[in-house]
Length: 410
Ligand code: ASP
Ligand code: MG
Image (cartoon, rainbow, N blue to C red; front, side, top):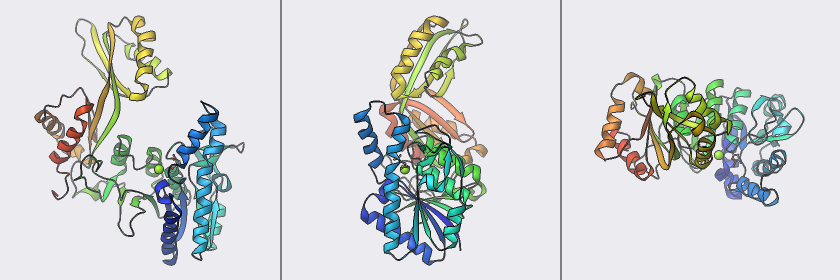
């Protein structure tokens, strides 16, 4: 007998029929003697609908009140899933975040989980109940309802699995696992049987949005065995997120090609090359709450240099005006230029650590297609380049092929 946490995303509970399918899967696991805790999202589209509704009343919705209302999507789902389980003859019981007591901090709309009181759920499980918990929501120490940020039900799932020391946390979604890249861009993309946590973090943060990043970090920290599966298929083992690299010995050096269309590049030209400049440029940017991704500073010629970095495209204008108004004159930079039509492509793989020549292969592949590389950054397990966005799909396709990730080639 195992204790399994199953998390179902919005499309997996998107209709009464889908909810009944969830109930049938839970019943199957119960019939095999397993204890099951189900964590659910709101029905697909519901959270967006609620946010839009709020904005009709308040252009900038009050965060506490927004959480009060957007947390209702999940509350509807837990009731429906529990009823569907009862209809199949199972003992079942729903819990909101507050009823579990998923204690969070008070950062409305992006709260963090502090602790979970799992005692009542344990007792219910022991008494033969299937448990259905609302994802995405918690309660702060003053009893305020909080939410965990978009996609936060993943984190609820993983956190419940950690608190209950579950044998496995299964994340059910509308794809059957983690792919070598987005199959909409490369039809030959393959499902990975397993991927390490580190790789998953890169693949998720770089655009393969299968799991909320925070949930992957959480699973890594608490050593939760995590598996991504499709709720639209009866069978299939999905993708297992592993800790050990050795399990991947027989696999390719590169696990996947991640990409991000939302990069914008900003260059501050002709800045003095002296201590404190990076801080003077990026300090005001970070004070304006703008996240900076890649950063590059050139070697100085005659004591002056260029400083480039990327931000999310949505924050491009804001960042440009911060730099023009607060920074340029202040530090005596020649000019600030920007390009919001850029994209980032990354090759990701823990195998890179023990293999040389990955970067040169990547650069050669792009060169052969005449794709200009504007910026490069590397870490132990990834190499990222910034390129003109119009070449993004071509770049992803040729890299996918060059690194032998195409189907059938293995
Ligand atoms: N319903 C929330 C959202 O749409 C949480 C989730 O689905 O994970 O972001
Ligand atoms: Mg989701």
